[in-house]
Image (tube, rainbow, N blue to C red; front, side, top):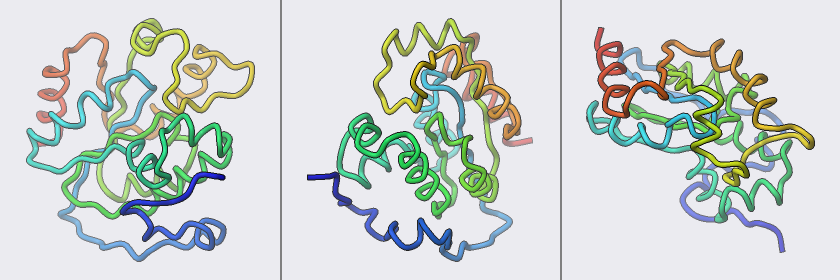
Length: 196
């Protein structure tokens, strides 16, 4: 039996709307400003999302956890079941329909493959690229990362890094070097920039 949708995210009704590209009407409020964290796996998105949200007195969301709640299964199991293409479509659908305010959003590393998802994050606020050297990423995620990594057959983490880096840079309003700064220093630097 395949993966079933369950949990609080049934409101997304993916089948018809995922095909048609329809979007729910979004509230337009110039005072609403979220922060979205993008970057490679191991760059520090899940590490920084909570302390940054706490410092800002915001809520936080990790889109990988939303996908797991949506399908009711671990991320790697979802990726295996759906395959890369459909996993990316599901991620795009979920993120492009996010409706949050005063929220720090930790995204999956593959979010930058979807212009629709990135457009939605831009509508919600500002985007921060957590940049990390390839060596640091390898050390953090290990030789065989398992957490839903979207990678083509025959591709290595080095190839993925080279492919994604220009996309992260393209969408970023701010770049933070997470391999040379501690989590606390990263939060302080983001807060200084955000409050300017």
